[in-house]
Image (cartoon, rainbow, N blue to C red; front, side, top):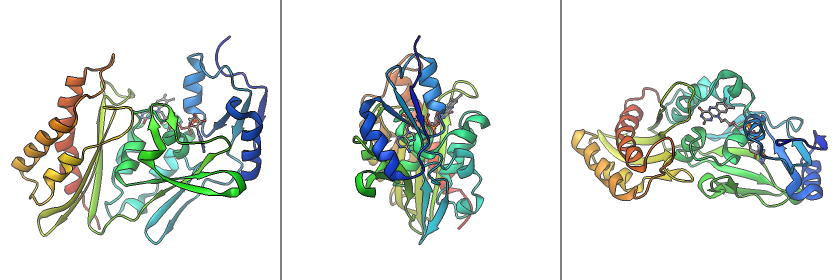
Length: 293
Ligand SMILES: Cc1cc2nc3c(=O)[nH]c(=O)nc-3n(C[C@H](O)[C@H](O)[C@H](O)COP(=O)(O)OP(=O)(O)OC[C@H]3O[C@@H](n4cnc5c(N)ncnc54)[C@H](O)[C@@H]3O)c2cc1C
């Protein structure tokens, strides 16, 4: 019989206990956040070798705090808990987060799934990691002796299903840094039907000063094995008034840098490339026209 059938289920109360269990069971241990992706994998017959599940829900890592403009998210913060933080989004800088969360799976999933699970899964068509990457989020990895390693999300997500975690380490939290004053961000995605995964998704953070773009960031999901930062497209927007010509030129730059987008049963690489150009314009416009701040 395939799927998850662990011999032990642990609910440690301290980070030290987590680390000790992870060292004891090594690759046979599985950390559980909300369990929603684990459920999907188990249902497909994976995770058969897991002997110990380590449930982090007793660690008290379910808090959202603000410190000097940074937002600190405990690992166990759920997606619906984050979605509800209206005051965080009032200025528009973090607008891509509620955009990404609003249509992310059914509510039952958002009520269970955690921010740590969403980024550690390292699945390239997930929505939240793309929005978090656009905001330059840093992952806090905890290990031996309570030491915390801070890793930018784009480094943390090394490849498909490959987080930057060593034996004995787990994700304790995420830090969304303070965005420059005047920044607005947005997220959009294209799906073939409601409730399906993104075929392409996009997040953008834009700052407009005296009518001209002073900084721009654009990140795509589902086009590569990890979030893809479109540096040339973003550079093409800086200094412009975001008119049609500027967006067209950013689309041309994207064409050049997005050389070999993912091709799979859902969509060809060529189709994804066309979609990415459309989402680029839509997302940048949505970010720039966002109210607040
Ligand atoms: C029906 C359904 C629809 C969905 N639709 C969408 C969608 O539209 N868009 C989208 O983006 N996503 C979607 N998802 C995926 C969803 O975003 C993920 O399942 C969820 O984010 C995973 O979070 P979790 O806490 O449940 O992770 P878990 O399943 O608990 O864990 C996922 C992985 O992360 C590891 N992990 C978890 N927490 C930690 C930690 N603190 N430290 C180290 N490792 C950890 C686990 O060991 C596991 O490898 C959908 C899922 C389902 C079931």
